[in-house]
Length: 158
Image (tube, rainbow, N blue to C red; front, side):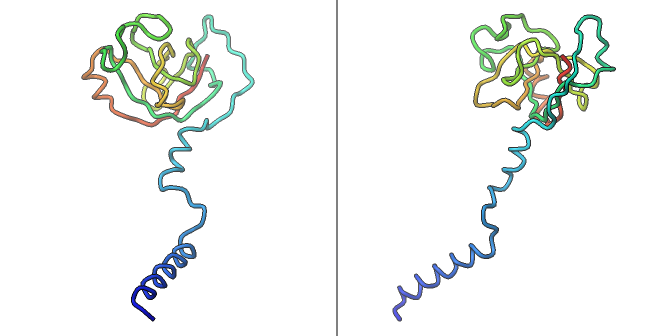
């Protein structure tokens, strides 16, 4: 048997062994974590919440999602040519967040990071960020950078 045939036979033998010892249908390493973030964790509950005079500490969330949470500030390199105006045409202020999944005006909490503080979805992100990514507005770029990247549950309260 020639050397070329031996090499080809060894290659196919190793290829055959790789199908036996590696689990078939196994996804790319880390894919499970990505899919976990991109899917809602809990389903919507059948609760009606009145928005006037509600103490959000005592309210069970309508929905809960696991999201990647980052930060941004009002600079043209992070937003657009009108960095102080949100996608919903409101002026930026403390408590504004950007998200592509939830409608404008949705009130949320991030209990693991901010306790009972209420945030309002008033801005959008680039579509490549997907639906399960939340961006918190900060007044300065330094504060936004210091926040970094976190993963946490968010609770939709209204």
